[in-house]
Length: 177
Image 1: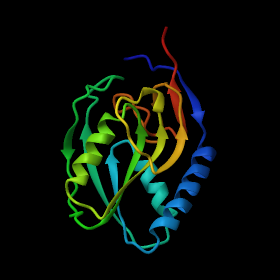
Image 2 (image 1 turned 45 degrees about the vertical axis):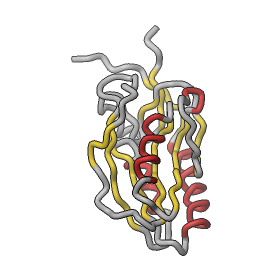
Image 3 (image 1 turned 120 degrees about the vertical axis):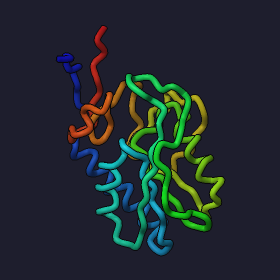
């Protein structure tokens, strides 16, 4: 059996809950009368999306998109593909993308460009975390929970080879140097 890497808490569940509440208040102020479509990027942001929409008290719709760029391991391949597309037409809709982490920006920039071609009325991004120190392409985050250090994060939906998603806190994996 593979040995498990050591994980340490970076952002605890109480800090996450406070950020989710703050983001929901900001989103509510901007979207309360617009019936937005929230698009969740699978699989990492499902926990964040579920917690976030429970705080939103206005009509909204949700859809899901699956993107692939990592494969196995800690490094992105840099090649993004749509593994599962949205089923809701977005032309003329107010669209808010829900992301767990913006890292290099390659995947997020690909997605925003992909969705923009479908001609939404507006397109904004809400990300729980931002690892801006690794950014390779510019990405505008309209609603941001946390700026995080350049560490490999797991927990609260974030994974390493599909493991650790169920941790209630956002943790980092200790380097094995």
